[in-house]
Image 1 (cartoon, rainbow, N blue to C red):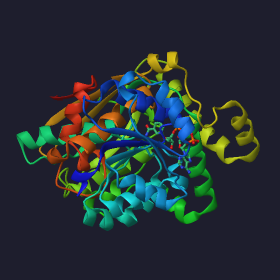
Image 2 (image 1 turned 180 degrees about the horizontal axis):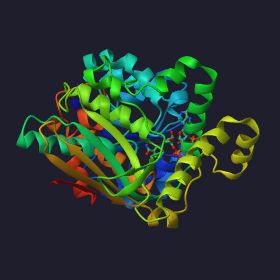
Image 3 (image 1 turned 135 degrees about the vertical axis):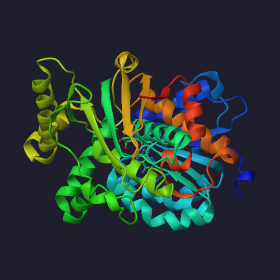
Image 4 (image 1 turned 180 degrees about the vertical axis):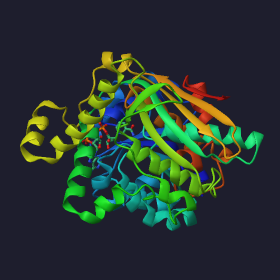
Length: 407
Ligand SMILES: NC(=O)c1ccc[n+]([C@@H]2O[C@H](COP(=O)([O-])OP(=O)(O)OC[C@H]3O[C@@H](n4cnc5c(N)ncnc54)[C@H](OP(=O)(O)O)[C@@H]3O)[C@@H](O)[C@H]2O)c1
């Protein structure tokens, strides 16, 4: 059905901070002949953005649509095979597009890091499965490194055995990056919703919130907020800020692939602060800082203070600091029969912005151009279950490190 669409990829939210970076990425990296359009609620703003892009974008069509106007979204998604959206906060403004894509059979990618949004989107799983739409959530720094890093471990374990993984840990070895106003708005939206509604709090704190049915190993899975010395790795570890989101996505990937990682798959994410004598103090500072930041967002007077100093929607880290950003992540797994594997996922550029622009850009190209290579699966999906190996290959081609070795 999508073969007759006149565009391959539409970028919705092209006027936002991360949207502009993705538009730039596509203008520089999309293959010749890829049919790309830019969408947003102001055509004037879109025209200005297009004018600042590399020449490849000069003839890209501009399409008007507003999340609050369902008819405009229906018209938009019927023109394209795939749509990548940065219109956030997703919980507030994202669901009408999911519905429109699920109805029209249009493939979809977003950048959400909001558990409540994906949980709500699951209501449209059957509709999307019936229309053939691949609705792929979290195709940026949240949660591609986690999801594809585990996929690589599983593939290696499957090449040597049955593919099941036991204890599997993601360790952030190093990263440098900033925050945009849009990301903060999404964070604040989730904090407010959790404070307002106890049912929402229950969803956000449930490690299996995004998995239909609970596997046998579910009881043992908890989020870790403490610090500890990891004897195996010889380092101190602290909580990783995105773990409570990424772990849900990775568990959903396992469920969507018929529990290919095993029903006892035991997954967690932490951040390494090294092994020197100051490491325990550093780990405590990371854990304490995260708690203090979440507390400050939830408490009126400190929230007002943060609102004054932190970036507004549309703003974010400078070009120089984005260029200096990077991340390096290792994932360690042991199979039930004792084999060990390590995958490494790394990229240059601010993880949430330059690297995310590459990850979402390549995801959108996969969905728009590679559909005959994608897994035969539709519905509300994850990067690993909805795209998998073709995305690994595209990202490697774009310069991202995605390595796997037996350890
Ligand atoms: N997963 C990750 O790693 C990652 C990384 C970065 C960002 N993000 C997420 O990406 C999202 C965008 O971040 P950002 O910093 O780019 O935010 P932003 O600068 O505030 O951009 C938001 C975009 O949404 C558009 N928009 C808002 N309401 C709309 C509506 N009703 N209809 C159509 N368009 C609408 C805005 O259009 P106007 O220009 O017309 O206002 C703008 O293009 C956030 O949810 C953030 O959390 C995720």
